[in-house]
Image 1 (spheres, rainbow, N blue to C red):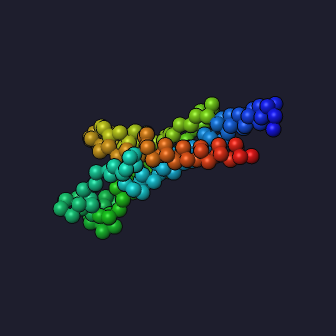
Image 2: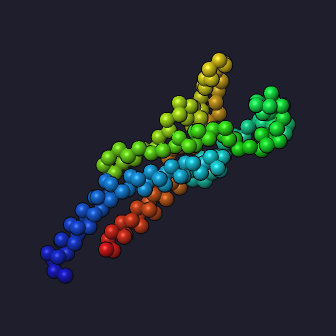
Image 3: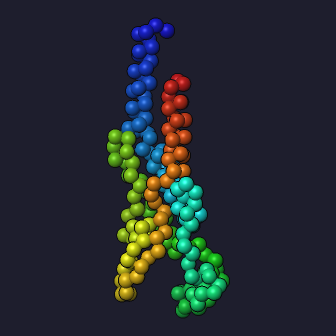
Length: 165
């Protein structure tokens, strides 16, 4: 291969890499991030340099008067409620995790539920017809070292495939 062929090969790879970064990477990275953040619900905590478990709920504490509390059962006891996941009733919250491509190889993770931020960050929560209360922080979206590693591995694999062509 002479210098001209080598320069053409480098330019071809550069064009393919730019196309990948602009048009493919945001979708792959978005899928990886959404799956990672949804897994936080299964693990009942936020994964960043290990699992940071969410504070447990009183309905799962056998010593609490709220143990097994089931509002739909007129406030009675429910054995399944005593062991349900912390945010079981928030399936809308987990299902609303999505991504938005922003162009130029960028992607943003979004959740359109109005209560997503207070769940993620903690703070004062408002429920219509009830007194405001302090919501426990149960982070599920944010910077994560493990997510960075997953996305870097994907990026490395994809770039190797382009270069090896």
